[in-house]
Length: 229
Image (cartoon, rainbow, N blue to C red; front, side, top):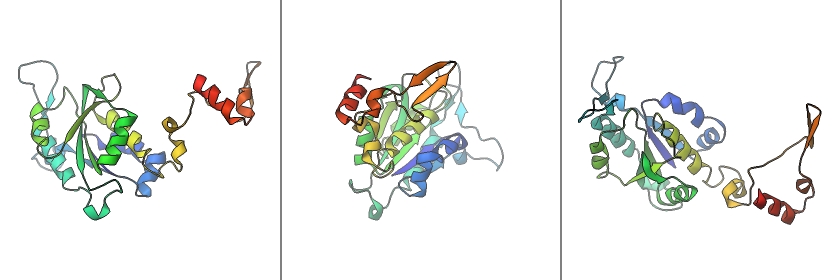
């Protein structure tokens, strides 16, 4: 699976994507991640400030990201689509563009499963400021299918946080990334309440113990306890 993030701030994503399970998935070539910065597609001397936003037509606060730098960045990402000889076992190489909007449908585990099965290349467009010129989306629809998602009910400063959430959610579902399929919590009986050693913690003269049922080894009773939790 290849992920391309269209972002003004690749350094904000890099630390998270190179750590822990996601970092290991890259080293083991389960996924690859690259960035396209819209500023790289704006004319100007090297080292100079390259403007990618402007005032909104019709007035209003804030600035709007221009369409052309976004379109060119996505075009470059699409030119790096997985060659057919390297396609996943699910089918032929197909790219999809993911667009973020607070009013779009919520991204879910079901959506993550669908993306894994249908696409080999995912381009995530991270907007900033008041958003992206709507014409960018209209033009990009002619190049590849676009899926529009919201990630959570909050509004974020930019699309980077939602993009990281989607990369994480998809990657952990790729076979062998977590080691065992049972490690994907939503595919087994799991609880939000988990415990580890020691059996008893003493804090301010009060003892906090691991529930007895978890120490019995009786899996049916443990599953019932987890379902209640």
